[in-house]
Length: 263
Image (tube, rainbow, N blue to C red; front, side, top):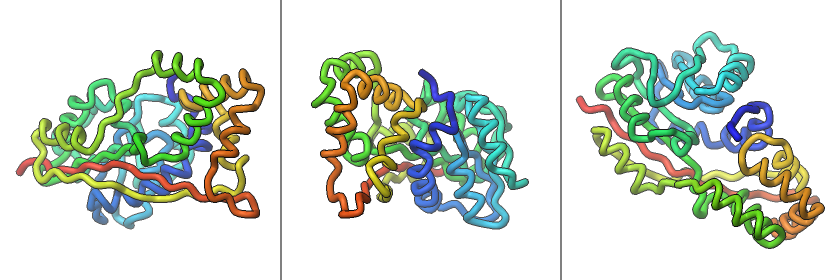
């Protein structure tokens, strides 16, 4: 499936993105008055954070999916922001159009990440910043590691099939640094961005999985149905440190990289 339901995606992942976006903007060193390109803008989490960080910042958001661009336009009416359909690998802007170019949680989705980074560099002025971040799925996203533990316990054959059908490469910090270096960027640096998310109840955590918005939620719906709800019951038991009122907190970590367009 493709990411074609922005409202559902916002319900599942929007609150995480909203927490991460300001941290990412600070990591990238974005300053007031800059013109920033938000590549793969999705529902607009990064654009919103950038606009909130300064009165004179302007943002252009691009995404290949029309439904996400329409959603961002409806949700973000600030005149300092514009949105248009475009792939990351072929950006419709002249050389040096932006002071900074950023990609929040989308680098792993690009058809050709190396080409996308080169395009981001091309459209950014000399001395400008190119930055990206993505979730650390190998150990920094308990929301999903707990889910897959529950799935392996209750629907192991379905998990094997799913992993065989959807093999996904998750780059680490070294790979991110190499992408930036190979694109000719200078002063390349990487880091981890730590955050946490509160959930008022298990339902607050689980119900967004049951709204089809990503390949994982699509799998969750089918597997929970096939196991007659045992997937959800097992996942509920795996949630750590649940308070008496049913609330709990889960941490998360994103991997970030930034570099400077050569002077």
